[in-house]
Amino acid sequence: MDLTKKLNFFVFLLFTPVILFGATDFEFTSDKDCSEKRLDRVPEMCSKIPVQDQDGTGLCSAYTTTQLVDCWRAANDQPVTDFTSPIPLGVQYAAKAGKDQINGNPVFDMIDYARNLDSCSYSVVRDEFNSKKSADFIYELVKNFQNAKTNPSSKDASADSIMKCVLGSGTNKTFSIEQIKNYMDEKHWVNFTSKIMDDLCKGHKKPLAFLPTAVKLKSNEIGDHFKSMNTFRSLINGRLDKKNAQPVGISYCRTVLKDKDAEGVSLRGALNKDTCKGEVHASVIMGRRLLKYKDGDKTQTICQYLVRDSYGSSCNGYAEHEAEAIPSTPGGEKPKICERGQVWVDENALLRNTAEVFHLKDK
Image 1 (tube, rainbow, N blue to C red):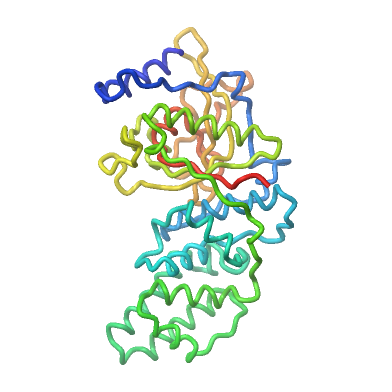
Image 2 (cartoon, rainbow, N blue to C red; image 1 turned 90 degrees about the vertical axis):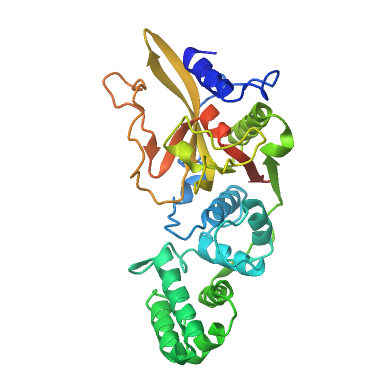
């Protein structure tokens, strides 16, 4: 174990002096086993799946689900003429589950739900609705729905505003005021929004019944935290090393994308509410690489995973380059931390902040 890895291990022990004595060490991926793998690049089938932008919808679990679903479709001889829209998936799941919000849906359950749902085309319900971002579009629907509930006399005006908002989204669907009013009779805005999404998607759906079931591993069901980290590491590397490589979804503390010293998961394997406030997130792992860096006069190495976030292809908010990394060519640029909205994270840092991993079974 090199100096940096020892220091990371020591820091982790420092904060956990009692529980981890006698526990398993984290087994870093060897340089030999950390061969570069990029599912986001040709010829890998996931290269066809774009980085998407959940904006302020809170639908990270839906975006993670559709990335896993479409990568599986593309890699298993299923014709993918269009991608799966995460927005109606997330909204319709929330309505079916009787939730009063559309965020915070569990990825594992959403994968199972998607298998029994005709998926909506991403070309119909995208991240943007003409000039409106998805969160703004949903906000307009909900605002007018709530206005009508609070002030029934405004129902006609609210229905008119909703119809203009929907028709302004660029859809080729025809909506009538009476149709909108019928949807507004729903008791809750989640159900109302689900009705709108379902109507937008009519005629643009594809069945997903051919999808396999999903696998989920939870840190708090495996054992001590290092044991779960090792289990996650083996699963992720195994999926990336397969001939028909597939991404792995993770439920984790997003703080680690900007802070490698983050401790977002408790020793019991739960996302730590004290250290991961508002940053519980879901994403997919799309790659792996061996990073080389200078440690005094020595060259050290560490394996990193490429996390595909769901906030678009911009790298705003992320560091640009690995500060101490060695350029791959003499005089060249240092390796990037962020590539088109995807972030490279040291494997031990990422897994220390991961509570669950999930993937679709093989064909």
